[in-house]
Amino acid sequence: MQRKLARELSEVKSSLSECVKEVERGNKSKKMVEILCDEFAKGIKSYEEEFHGLKHKNGAGRVERDQMVLHIAESWLDERMQMRLEGGDGSVLDKLGVEIETFLQAKRRSSLESVPFNALSAPPRDVECEEDSGASDSNCFELKKPVESHVNETEKLNQTNKDDENQKE
Image (cartoon, rainbow, N blue to C red):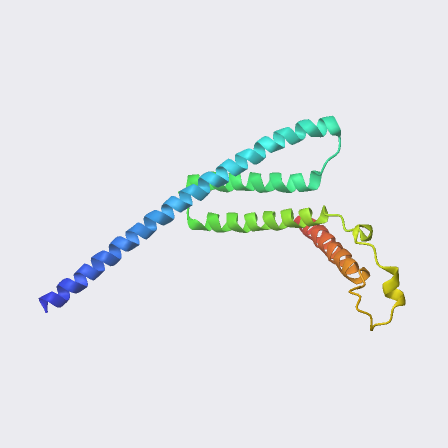
């Protein structure tokens, strides 16, 4: 009976030590994420200063996207300050994760919008293919349908971005 109790006690000790190590790893990763978020927010603040300098020089730019980035940076800084005042917990990391995902999705959408979809950039179609019957060995295919579907997808993404921006306002 003593051996059984000693074995259970050693299992509990090892389990406790593993839990302590896991909590320490969690704390380290939490601190690293906090540091990265702080550095990212500070970088965005410096970007804001550069942006305002360039805005006065150029008079034009991508104001909406830059305002979104600045809003995220300001909210991160506010959250970090509140976290430091309150002592902090994991819920702030969850909020930041959601905001990071939102930012990355917006970034992906904007990068997709910048890619020009032009039917003229497609390879030239072979005129003989249209004249031949379906029994020929030619590998011709119609290019208009995929291009139109790409254009429709781009229009849908643009509409989604506009809807997102309207919801933010």
